[in-house]
Image 1 (spheres, helix red, strand yellow):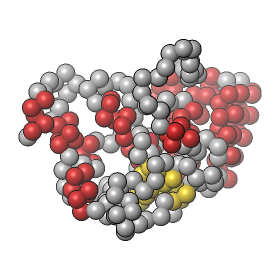
Image 2: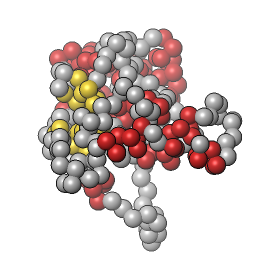
Image 3: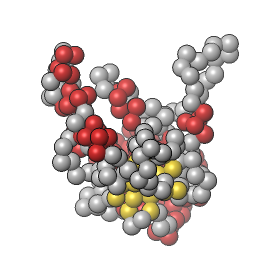
Image 4: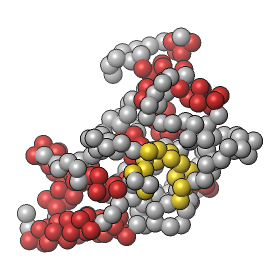
Amino acid sequence: MSRLSIVFLFLFSASLAAEDNPYLSLGEVASPDDNALLEARKQVDHYHELEIIDAPGIQSFHKRNPDTETDRQTLCRVCHPALPHRESLRSRSFLNMHTRYIACETCHFQPQGVSFEYRWLDYGAADCCGMVVAESTDKAAVPSLIPRPAARIAPFFLGRPALLFKDDPTAREIRETWKEGGREAKARLKARLHVSLKQDGRRCADCHRRKQTLLDWKALNASDRQAHAIEDNAIARFFARYKDKDQRLRMTELLR
């Protein structure tokens, strides 16, 4: 490791120790092992900065949602696109649909032995931590379950969101460390930030089944009808019937 990389890692470690953000402190529960570091080095070698190209004269086919474009972005968006699920042709559309109202960390942030509380978090808020959306019992005023266009279900720990927005000072420091660090520093930083993240995320049945224990739909302002529709979802049951990537099912299986 170069001397510059060692300096950046030292400064970043000191910052993490002083930082009170649950995302970072909970990520310290486990340390990346040698296999994680090896995989991180491979990914760093193949990493390319995201570049958005606007083709002149070609009008977008889909209608743009101005609320979506003005939402604050989390640290995940530094490297991952807004619609990050691409591997599975079978399920990527349904998984990407969830990014509009589910935080990435809700599915992927799973430190061992840690229990979260899940609440609505307003991604349109201006402060660093985001703003917890007020719970409402007036279903006539909030008939769609989602209380605000920019709200997403996010994990909370000890009353604070367990995620980082890109405009948070610590997130800016992490981005600067990545930008200026060498290969080994980037690999260690990547492994450290992802040590409590599971690549495959949660299963559909973790939220879409009766008597599931992950999300409290009542606390998330769902009516009885909405909670039943989410937990007894035909599409989630359909995907649960796939046992491997090569298995084929008929669309009529949705009726079961």
